[in-house]
Length: 257
Image (cartoon, rainbow, N blue to C red):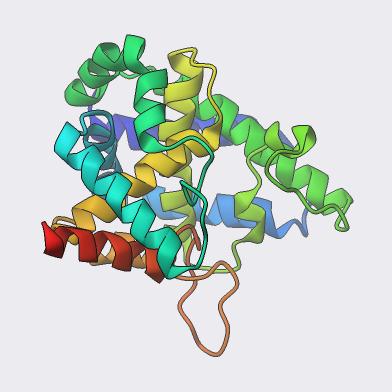
């Protein structure tokens, strides 16, 4: 099975989870966005595969950080906290990338082999729970619009709910969201690691910022992470997972080293 097969697995897994529910919530925007993204993948398999490959490269970078890389990341977070006037030791998660790598140390070699070979990753074991958690969030928020999920709340942490806040109608935005969370679900579910999803996504963000600072990142990928979930005044929409200060901090540290 190759990368194209992984992209097909995204469609198959989502269809299995959502297919029986297509008519139950006809006005559910979150479900409609997922379906639009699946249609985009079907119509643009080469482009979807290219994006998937970019994230696999990010994941390989994330799990093979050198000590030099980690030192740069540590310095970048210190600089980032200063730029935003925050004394916290890590900005996006209470588990730093260095700590994350210690948590996965026993599994790291297995992870490296999996991501180096690309497949046979048992992708369905990652995608099925991902789409189940996304569907649960879509359903919960559709029937209870006053509910506001927050990280740390057990109910919210049992779901993947970020897509319900994305307002962009560009299906590529949710494609990035799905693949990034697919990597997170693979590391947690398939490898049976007892870590929080934010720990994985924080480390993935550091990989993205580091590759960008070194001139190794596709601008479209960076823009989708930077652009806001709720765009205003003609802004391009995105995932809103990253802010310019964090990017700036990494850029400055790379320039200084």
